[in-house]
Length: 501
Image 1 (tube, rainbow, N blue to C red):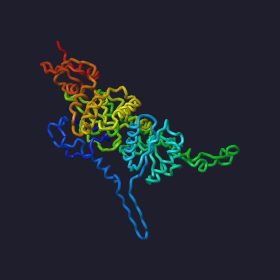
Image 2 (tube, one colour):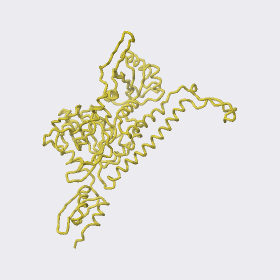
Image 3 (tube, rainbow, N blue to C red):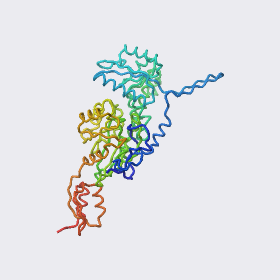
């Protein structure tokens, strides 16, 4: 049985998911505290979702525009989404893999607030160093941009400054790459101070290598007076505008790094109590939009934001839960991963991802209804290895079982025999998942056999919450406890134990 404790979470921000599209304020599949579905009570596992309501209140709707004309002033206004054309270079893998990658890029573009008009895929051994897609494809791309009236081109890769500049010069519209697209989504969805700081740091690190300036035309000239430290040999261009910008970015990056280090120290202090009491930690990880937040809501009534969008929420949310025998552990919902996650983001979110690397168990949530679940699993494993979390025990969970066919279910069970199939939306398989999580929680290493006086009920309570009880019996001398405990609590129990003959 998993229940939510009333203590304040370590981080009260949200994480994303998309197991459903509505708020489910009257969810017929909602269940009792155990998630078993026996009571049939109509409850909303995702909470009131006030953050989602606020976000949707600012959403622009495609096709809705305001056109105002006045005979005297001829005023014209139009409200619309950014119109984009996608471009990708297919270097390896099958054609299906290339189409899946383009579909994901389309979802990223739509999440950022764009209207996708067309997409082009270029088959090449490697991206062109000058234009990414090659000169011939650039002309074809320009024709598509002119024909569709697009104002932006999004490339499915990380482009350097020269490639971006060459494409913009030849096509005539703004060009962005996959990295800046993901950074833009993060900037839109960041809500906490730490999240905004991490996103700004990642953006500045990206921009620092791609600054564009006017060269010497904006340089500051050195003076000609010897008293000013110049004189003969000292005249000429001083610091250029681009150098000034780069220096200011470096200064800002250093300031943000100091700010994040202070926040990381605060996070460590919040984590210190769990570490001191050896409270097991479970981190929910997975691909973006796989249903991690909905699963956390189902397990703990966390009420974190749920939206059918990529990277809907960024910051980790930690909730305290209890096992069926009363033992306490924590569940942490983490930021979602994606293929080719920008290294700038991984570096900037290092303090946030510590929750994953230091967990005792990873619940790896996979979208069972996705076109390529195996590809998502590989992408997540790649990121986990990069943050030194590849050795943490993992429980694979295939979510959204309510959206797949029987044939798909058979194929998934054959491909991932150790995985658990659940539906966070309908509650299917949740009881089995809770039981499996409790089985995989680490058992304290020391076995203690002691009789505690009845006056030490506080120690018995801590044994229930922090240890694994083998047996418990009330005797004439006190409470006879046999339990697995962590070293600190074991020492306290032995010190307070009643001497028996």
